Length: 154
Image 1: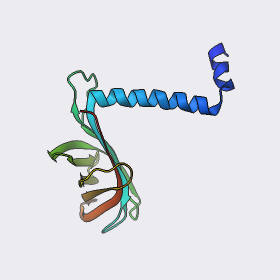
Image 2: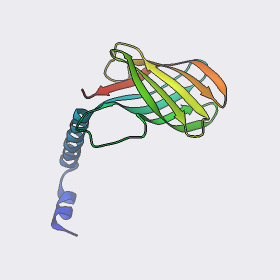
Image 3: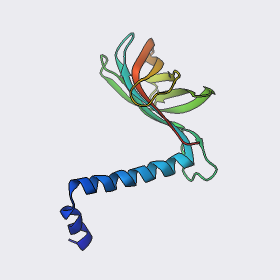
């Protein structure tokens, strides 16, 4: 075991947590300078209970080195149906601060359009509506009023 590895185990948990938080904060700040990013995360209801976690790269910066096949990547859940699907897709900003994510599972079993409402608030205090097609059936009226909407970058 190396000296640095042994030293890590002698540090207090608070110091280790602070070091990890600092490293993650620096990474997040660097990523924010590279691209505008949007995350929608929440659970909701309406015609049936559902959940979502989708990360999107809205607009890469000129200096961005990462190349993505799609703008968005995440998951959509339909609890009563026992469905959890990985989704990818695209994001647009039809008006300032309003984001629309069009995502679909690889097999086409689930496709959804998720849209946030203004204002965007810190924490789980946002409204995101969804219109989906699940196994060929339209599922509308889906809404989360306790979603996290996080927008970073330019």
